[in-house]
Length: 372
Image 1: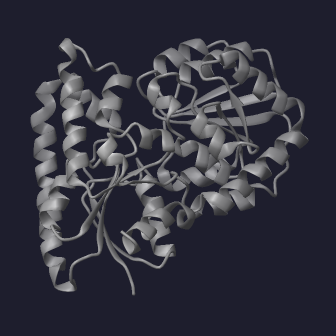
Image 2: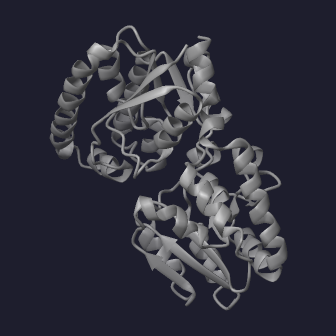
């Protein structure tokens, strides 16, 4: 018997590719997936800005209502096709999950809850004013989790952080990467690893990413001509990172790369830099860029945390969170031995192919739908 799933919400796969991986994996696993999506057009940084400046909240409400009216109209048009077995509410769906519950009262609602609102508030130091904002974020999380039948998280550490009653109805699905990344990686591995070593970081410069740690490592490596690094993106810690790495002439700063160009872009590098922050969130997650870098045939260099060690052990170089010295040493080691670096590139790709393709990632969701 076929399974019909509706991917629902205001998610944006160009900003947060996680839901694209799940949709692709569900389809690869034999499910029929239709999308009812109206992107909100506000990434995490924009939402954080609204929390910092509450007078912008009416703008968020208006945009959300406009998107919701489109979602509701589309859902009503699709009613003649029958009730879906499940509804997948995409990442950053803390509000969308309530609309999904209202429109699909008899379907199983899955909420992709990779990051909690309270976690974002704490990481970005938004919990001032006597903790009022943090309490509000916790309430938003609690209401969203109550509205979902099944909660999807990306690591066992994230699962353990859920309330006990929610933990029992949660599943763990790694972030993974879409087919485009694996295609780019297969082509990239035909290219040898040579000096100078080419490394790339792609991110929003949040405290979880720890860009100042990377920049400090680049300052340590300022005189090492064997290593060239490209830093892609902007965000909260961008200015600090640029200041710290200012003395290294082999650092290139790129404002952004479009999502459709990113797989081939990253595959052109030998090393993909992960996350190095020390905030609580950084110790519980494995970022998109780790899976994407491995799928693109790059050596993944990231922090040595329990979830990343579990996912990448033997196929990455892991350094202590927050340690610019260890990061600099890891990059120097790769530059010193290009043959070893190439073996690590191959190992990363092989591990991603075995465990982190879309189908492998989404298998737990299909299993839960078929066997509630």
